[in-house]
Image 1: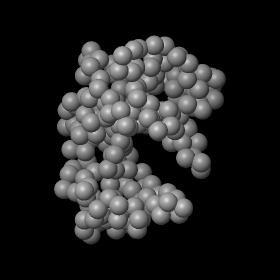
Image 2: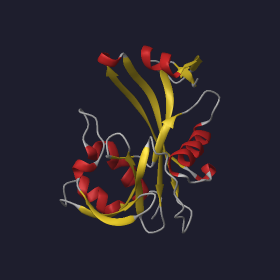
Image 3: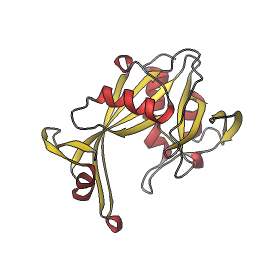
Length: 200
């Protein structure tokens, strides 16, 4: 059974609960959104197994007693097979996320810690967690930002799966967003941070 530390709305820890109870009762907890980029200015989006849409490189809950950097390291390894040095990961933002699905008795209240880290040079030995991720899409960060800002209709990217690597065209419709979100708001800040602040 998976346990999560829970918090008040000011991010003060108030206890520990099971993941099921956390989501049934809408308790505040921590998650981590992991982003990987490379020396060539590319950012890596995972292909979600459940939707086929593009999302963070990896993401998940911060488990009870775990630090955010520990969770970053674990999620990157579990979902895409990278043994990353999380001590070098750069904290970009903390997003206060909330979403309700009353029909499923599911309520999400998360402090989403957004971190970015450079992919080890020359790394190609990806291993994907099949129930979560079917592959990665490598996209030039600036071109991706231009796409989400409607400066271009599509961008050329590389789709990486367990057995193949191929060039594909990506449009705004390929990104995972909730019904009340738009891609540039969800992903624009991360892309800008990678471009401007991490100097790639």
